[in-house]
Length: 281
Ligand code: FAD
Image 1 (cartoon, rainbow, N blue to C red):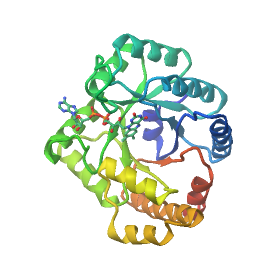
Image 2 (cartoon, rainbow, N blue to C red):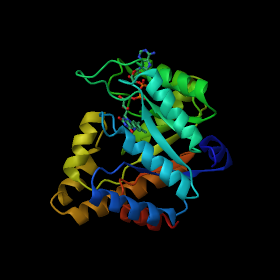
Image 3 (cartoon, helix red, strand yellow):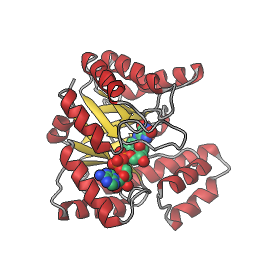
């Protein structure tokens, strides 16, 4: 299976993000979406990692199966906070033996009631991954600054240091391309030239998007907020607006020279297909 750093060197990547389903209906939806989106020939896909105990094995099982069944590489997200070294080392060994070559290394969010574990920051995990096997390693980037960061300057310094240890970055979603452009400029000023692939979320729910944006510190520009208000009660109109906004954003990110486009498919194919159609792909 190809490594994502090699793919990025060859040209712009197009990738999709899934989450591990927890119900039988969800599992059926996931299978249909992966099969349909495989037809769009993605460079790779990624599968998020449930930070809560008890669902972590779902990501592993799905990643190993889809990676073996399809022609594109599957990258597991992996969070380290609350984990023990031995647990993560064992999971990395399973991934390596299963032919997985790419890992997205994340801190995850600390929980008050959880075991502290052996890791504090994503960089601790990157170090363990490097010591365990020959993986291509991605890390998270926050164009609008990570919500736990003290200030912008220290956020950018930490991000540049983290990207220097990694092979590529993948960004949090955002709605204004300026945030991505400015982040890349600030990273370049810190002599960081690791590629950062922007994450684009075609939303399907206005309330859900507002909630997620609040948690992540994502700005919803005033004009978009008005367009969202106008469709909030109509699920199909909301989905279509999500597609329109995502397609506009992708077009701008391509103008800015983004090294890849990572689309949050959220286990559904329809919006991704519509974005491709809007872009004439
Ligand atoms: P870090 O890089 O460790 O940064 C966290 C904070 O610590 C930042 O404020 C940073 O500036 C600061 N920091 C870093 N190093 C140091 C240091 N040495 N000293 C002091 N401060 C430091 N979560 C999930 O649970 N599952 C997922 O599948 C998942 N997928 C994601 C995918 C993407 C693309 C993104 C952007 C996020 C994802 N997340 C996921 C969320 C992520 O786990 C959280 O946002 C988490 O709070 C931060 O993770 P990180 O890897 O960026 O952390």
